[in-house]
Length: 426
Image (cartoon, rainbow, N blue to C red; front, side, top):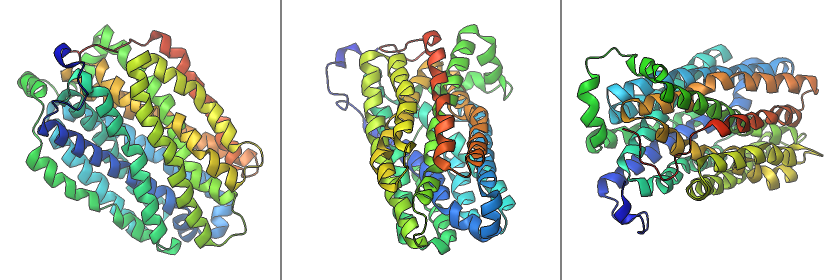
């Protein structure tokens, strides 16, 4: 515990190394989310070129649902594999490898000639994205003192707002027909791996236990996690919370361009592309406010209550934004409300999940909760696409019907441990 300094502002006494850790973890997550958002912008013109307008009219929602499902499955596998690797090989080394994977394969989207090729490249991109979060969250939790973890987590997860903003600015400057150039923008983040490799050392707590891990089998952290009743319970609860949070956040951001297009029928492709950028920028005003409020709230009313409030309000916010006439103006005004709750809650996961597991299992446990959870959330986009088909192509109806899944998280919160004010388990 760091009791003598609890009355100080959180940033007082933070070392240069700790600021560097926060910076590289933030940048890794910014570009991680940016790469995801680039696809959301490019998918419309990309699929129109690859399958044709007729193919989009008859099979577009199904293909988009498949692409997101494949992406979520890849994210899950990457989160599991690289989470274990981060607990054995190192947080910083794993971040370097995962960032290189997702940047290289984001760029490779530009060479795809069929939507099936896109699916393969999307899967491998997701492997890197899933692994990067687990390593970065564990690195941040271990580098910062107890009193500073919540605000540091808020700053880290604010990347969920800044990443899409960068993608929106890129989309604004590139003609819709030149969608391949959007993916080439995604190669730039590889440059930060040089800084990570050269400047960021492993946290002291990880170095202290690393020797004990070296002689055990690679999958031992997973076996230990589920053999121990305390860590097993924490993993299952965190996994369910992760699934619910991911399902809501992913559905809102992934289908937003489709909702804009539905509300902009009859307008030119250039105007629709500009509207998509504008709506994304507006959406993530809410994200930014949410990710800063949630950790602050979690420090005052507890992790469970903060997550519960946001889970309960997310379906209400989505209902308000997409019901009724579904005009572009309505969507623009209420999009921040959707992201404030549905995406903002993710900042609680950055803070809460690493607090549930000891050092030797931290990246594994957090990776399972936040990343492997995506494999269970992978059916949500297909379900949304099915609802869209039943509603004669209405994107808003599909998103609205699947929003209720967010309420499921409320059922497990009473069983979740409260970690407010406690040190990280060792």
